[in-house]
Length: 266
Image (cartoon, rainbow, N blue to C red; front, side):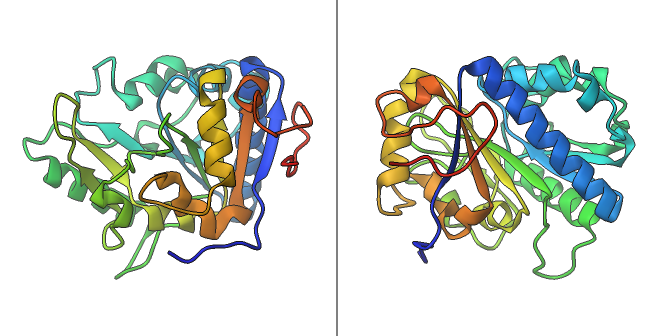
């Protein structure tokens, strides 16, 4: 993999999970306004999990977010477990319960990953077709999301690009199936070329349990097999790490900034 050694991680450390959620809303709103002003539309892909829940709630509560022209916003998902949209494990359901019914986003602008197909591969193809249609793509063109919001798993994965998974190396598809052995559910995820093509990416990291993996990921030589989130290293200049102080604890991340960012690696 090509590395981008000239780029340093852009890390913002905020005080606590509430500050992280508020900063995430600011980040979202700023980029939405910029995109809508420039091209009358904002295309964003969201992730699920525990960390973004409060961020989603604030999207549906704060005036600065609710006042966005949501009819210009197109919502997509980075990844999804292959469960019905009503499942408590669904990333779509998390967004639906926290903010979708509280903002004026048209139903036709909500592009969830379809999980009602008998064949999970057909579902991935359908999602890819939706992306191609909304972005007006031709041939091997990639969509350029204005913002992709990511998290990081305890073993260094992002989206559903899991360690030792073929999906990490899929450069042919926009969305692909992640087959998981054992009791875990299969998934569909955006591929890493799509992530890297985005204009901006935010990685939200919260909690003391993430401190060790965060430091290891930020300080290790890029190894996308071990740490799939390293697929972002060629575009680190477009990635902002939004980290709370608990996740930064025990690392050499410094400078609690509450929303005023920059590289804070000693």
